[in-house]
Length: 228
Length: 339
Image (cartoon, rainbow over all chains, first blue to last red):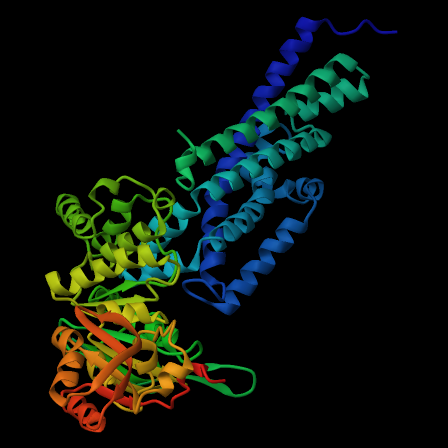
């Protein structure tokens, strides 16, 4: 029977792994938003009910996005390793994991953004059209602003999902809390580390969701009479 | 002024194309209010959407101050849209923007600088009586207030024509009044030409100078409201006239009279004095058996059911007709009282 890892050592390991997870998920979420939001806008615009209906473009983009979404993240990790190596010169560690995380999240964000934009009331958009607004203005001042809270929620959901995915990266030595839980906690049967990393992982997801909910609520002007 | 000519629009349906508008022509003189009424499915919404330049007609023209807007595209189309202010059907305000922000939207599209924009927005909110609600979001406003903001927004870019599509459909009668008062002000104070599409005859009674009846995609009647009121065979007369309330009059009482007729009187003088004068001049007994009163704009309109006794009953009736009263000889059991 091995001595259990002392708590201050557990603490150090978890803190460092948390930093890695936050770094991976933070950057990946940002990049996924940067890629997914424009893609979602294009998906919505080109849809039959959108502002610039283009059937073929819509179908092709939709198919690419859906195939991208259907690939399991573990598969993506492996499949993308050559691409990852070319991009960041390594396939292990947090920075390397950002690549498949981002690639996996972009189509996810795109679909969420598309559905958020679709929820914007058609009458409101048409009213804006009658004011002589250009397409750019319609997207910026009407669609994105009206769907603002839903978009924030979409990014929040993405971040929480990516926290889960990043844990999976532990399987290939990606670093972060998942890696810690699998290699130290599970494989070396260290219960303290397993427990601590799982708790922090859960707490991180919860905190992320809470923050995104708060921001979405803060920017939402609907029913604001109910708030003080 | 706005002129719609030979507007035709069909939609692909099951098998056959559905003809929503079938050669609609309509002219609204500058500074007047024209109502478009008709049953559901008559093409009202399609007409409104075409005039709002949201739908491109198959054929025909829509001219504002003589310029045809139908064929325009791109930037020209966007600029043209600001020449027609649109109050769309239903809730159309940006819910994430304040009342002032909503009114500012057309000015932003037109590239008006911020200071000028603010001044114009304040002016418009004042016009619709919502200065103190400038910072409120749509969800903090009542239905009537939201609709007035929509009117202010439609007017922001100073269009010469305003199109209102069912502006009162979601409102109770009292709030309807406040919205109609604003539309009336738009015409009288700004001289804007107003086209209002509605199923609500109260709108026609309150603010319309002209009215067009749409049926099956065609204009089946078009003219001044007051003219149509007295025109025999008009389809909308009945819905413009007040109900005849003849509570308390029994069939036996009605049976006592030599002549029973329904009389429509238009204008203050007629409503107030014509019937007593007829009785006096022709020395007949004239009794009012029932009646109702309404207003078309500022003009009072009365509809009476009268009974006349005396030798010169017929003479009294034709004397009324000569003075522009509309006489309809009623069967004695009108209103189903004898049934």
